[in-house]
Image 1 (cartoon, rainbow, N blue to C red):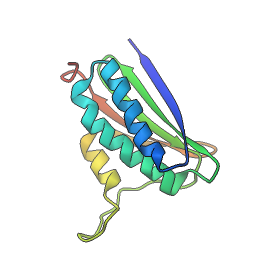
Image 2: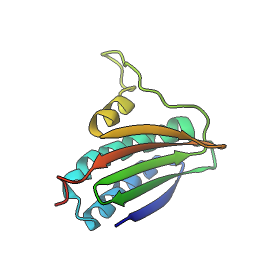
Image 3: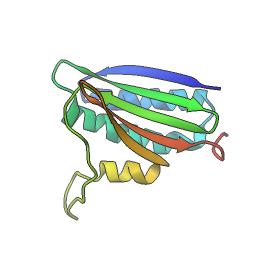
Image 4: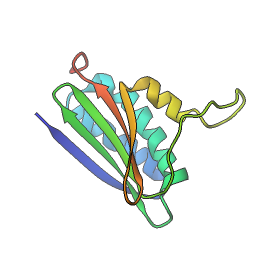
Length: 131
């Protein structure tokens, strides 16, 4: 079994909420209710990073969910340059913890470079979470 859902979003703040809604709907349809909150939080962080650091003006970013037998892979691709990196935020900082947080929630994490842009991906195991 392999399922894929993809959605493109414009460079707007409202796209972060829209990406959460899409992920919630897809995971509910796939009966993966126990993963919804973690993946919603992760897509919020990755979509926000795509808007702030990755997507040039006038471009879109995409959110893709892949479901295999025992895992779900979340991908956020943008056409901007650079490599996201996990940072150690100061205690009083209002930002800088997103990638650290998603790495803690996901079972695997990585970044794929493309000729234009990059894809940040996360993997969540589903074997014990299929209900």
